[in-house]
Length: 401
Image (cartoon, rainbow, N blue to C red; front, side, top):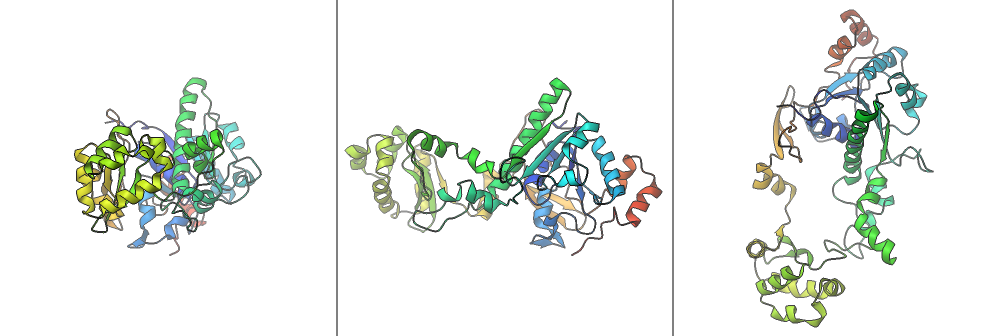
């Protein structure tokens, strides 16, 4: 069965997380992704622990189904091979600081001048324009400067980042969306274009709900733990067994059902709690009253009771519990792959399912430089020329532990 991006050729110059997550999405959907890595060291993430038989577990997840080619872009012969590679590609993904490719003579304008259908996607900390364009960016910095840390965690506590690297992953998702939009535009115009996105813009864009409140009222939302600034009750509670669960009962009929479940008709009749807006205003009152009741029974009992009444609820799972959840298994969100070094190992699955052209994980992550010679031969190099590049150190793995 064909995948939606079958036939699409992508060259990936990015490292670490954001760019590789973008190209992982494209590879899962059928694109041929050739990852260009530095001689001797490869992607920096190859050295991120933990390791399985010398291979980074993170690298194994993010680079499944890709090809690895080693080229030295600081040498003219390496740049020549890279230029040939890009000439047959539809998309180039890079995540250097702005201006780095230009200094190598491989900037978007130069590459697209000789290959106008090429789509160049640049991911960076702060984007290709603006006063911060040359600043380095990491997930922690973007979460802080984009406002995300100011609304994460418990009130009165130290600033906390989200437990997942959401600005890295979000930047990768926006990049993938931008590439698909550029591909759609190319179908109409025949021309490629430059796609520009950044880590900093992820929390800004994802903060739409809080931004709407601020733009309308001037109110700056702070950290609320698991609570919501516009709906109550909508948060986590501990059960009698110390385990936590969450529920959402801000909608009027759900609130009335919840009052019935906890046998508190007085809460339903309380004049302070008649509308969702009222309940948001008195959220701390609701939290205290419900918490006292919820401490009488185990969390799982309350989840079942809520589900029986159609109230959205669920346990606060640890990561291992989430991966083992029968719904995650049914949705194929944990997949096993065979790697030539590591052997059988698990990676996360594909979260979007297409009925006619589904994606698929097409193989394990590559070893450093595994596909160098084969790709060079496809670019027109003879076997002797490919070996000469390797012997010169321009296309030789020589991975450093």
